Length: 404
Image (cartoon, rainbow, N blue to C red; front, side):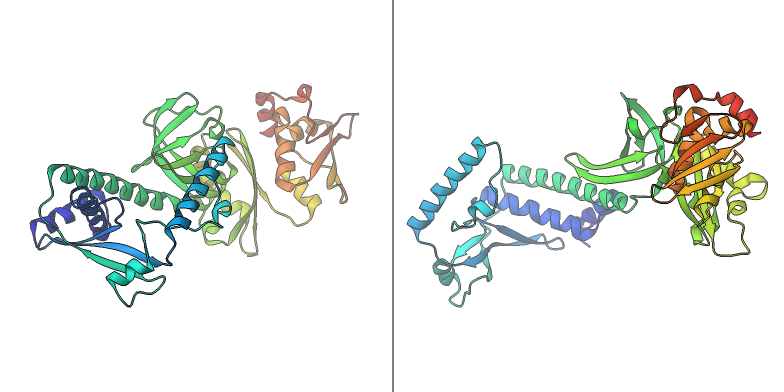
């Protein structure tokens, strides 16, 4: 194994890159160096490098196209320039449709048939010709510097593409991260190979993101930006709750117990509806675990957020009644046409059914997909899930005492 091959392998191991990717980078750099010292801008250079012998070969790669008259081509180029200027004045880019009627010729990548015949008498339209190029001697200092810059740039691109591929596959999943620092309303999260971004609207209002703290995050999207991969994270989405349930509850991970819906007021309370077709399994009990072991772990992961686990029911009236837990419901009347439910509760359950700032009835409505109209059996009070007035707010302390 030559020293060059060893150096390439070392670079592959250090940067976690494939041997093929690094070789492609080196050959691209050598092509740039060749163009700098021996070639010209109209050449589409391809280089083959042998790391064992340090030998290289070079070709000019051209696609054979139809002959275009020089005057016709000149006229087309002038027309193209006029159309591009017009589009620029209109603050827009020239579209391909607007230039499709003009003859095109790219001297860097294309070769007209007449010239192609001089290279190969059997040349055909659309054929790709590899025209051998001579290598007069060693590269000069500037060409070597060009090659070095290309290698650095290409290795960085390869690293970015590999990181992008790794994290793109984690979209819609949970990932562990360490809080780095806050920049305004943004929080930077160390994910190992890259820094993730937790935007203000994806944060939980009462959570503190202290540097060094390790947390679970939901990966909302991974995109390739101008500076490399951009990983957007969330702590507030309901999908985070769903994915943590999958991680902590084997029956959900295996599919025996299914999550039918999640409604969340991030940092305060979530309602999770579960269902199973296995009569031997209690879906709610499976989520709670022995002495609350499973649900307590999930609550801890979510920073103390309360969680109501509800058994899904295909009967809307029963489902709505359970969704309003911990309040006890007296009756439910449905209006299928408007998808509204008139729910009656006793006076001592009315404020509990509403919840703090209308939270309980709002989440129950979101979970079931029904608009809920709460009515007090012992009085004249009536409140809708999407119109909860401020004066019905119940203090968190009094609500918790009633829940107990």
